[in-house]
Image (cartoon, rainbow, N blue to C red; front, side):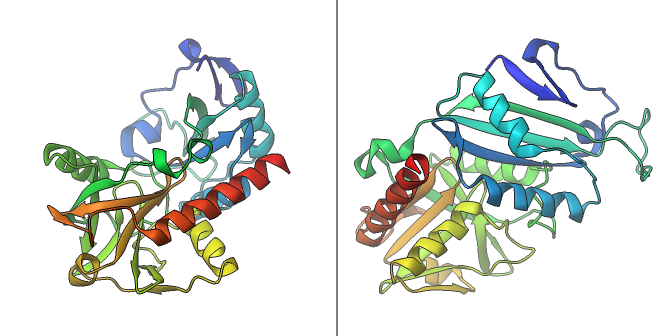
Length: 283
């Protein structure tokens, strides 16, 4: 996409530059969001921006911008349609490399777009299930902050790819937390279970939507501790993220989940997602 937003300006991506002393570059002292837009409209935009504000407050960055206006305009300038918007805010540039920062630093704000597929329009048959491995969760203790410090996530995703699978599910102190770039859910006897929300996981906007839609449809849900044995005995396992919606996991550590096929409750949830997205886009 040709146009990006950088520090108050919409400019060509070839003109966008950031100082080598920017703290996002030097320390990963920055947060981000990835927000899907379908037909030019933000999907769960308010929820994404609420999470962004949580991350900014947590690391004490003050960035006073009209995010909705900026992102909607950026999408329109890049042709509208179905786009994913990446928004990153770093603490800014101090002119040298120091762990200490001034309270009045001016943040660096960057946003860009990339095309995405409208997964809802394509239908449930177009969603391929994924295979996963379980690996150690090596991340820091504040996973609820959507930080750009993603080295542990990168390493476990590379481990997954080298193992010939699609996703890495992480475990810490004997309990599953989430995937490298997704939240985790399982189904047992018609109940959806997901790890408790806390500092160990990122509060995914799609995760929250699943819980909302399930409640509206009378599907029971519980936020609980999930160990490895419980995961492997599940009737269905799902992962969820903003750009992938809800995806069935068909195999974990080389073992099929139940019969190895997409499950009936996943199909129901995808139907609920599709209806929600259509209502939102046509509203």
